[in-house]
Length: 252
Ligand code: SF4
Image: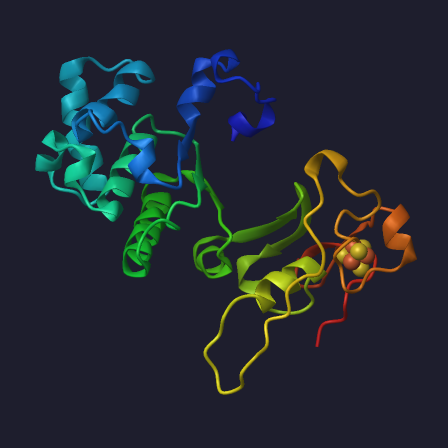
């Protein structure tokens, strides 16, 4: 993926046209990310014309194909966002994002604003698009269930620092980084034993004053003196997990 090998300018207007075309975003709330005064067809036509250079006529044909790709009827091209359900709006946002045939799609909490039943269909759609069109996808989510079911690899971040990188099939298996463990502990479960959720102690530090050593040491239940002064090395497990911690717990 050529795109990932070049630095990304901070400002959108400084990014080359090819980067704008190949790096597309789907936002958390489709209600906010679609222009309420633009029809679905107009929203999808815009990247086709501005990023792929299609004529208005050619764009119309592609709109039909893109609506079909996200499993929406062609008649929806005439509708306004207010005439769609939340799941349908997010499908339109996905159609708009894939219109320029990107290499990489960044999906920022793409289903968190949707009902649970709709979440499953949108995630299924994304999985199919990934297989059919070969688009790389980075899914950002606080929901570990969504991540584990949708991704090949899971990267756990704390204060902008990568804490664990794991094949998603290994996400639930020990060993875990202590922060991953805390996230997993916070997921409500229905089972026979009532589990008490133990929250992490302390406040999230200010990002502009990130703690030295291991950034997680101010809240880590396993922290020791060395954690305050020395950043840990990466520990790689036999199953391919990479864990950023001085004291990687043993797997069972
Ligand atoms: S390095 Fe120390 S503070 Fe950081 S996660 Fe490991 S035990 Fe916790």
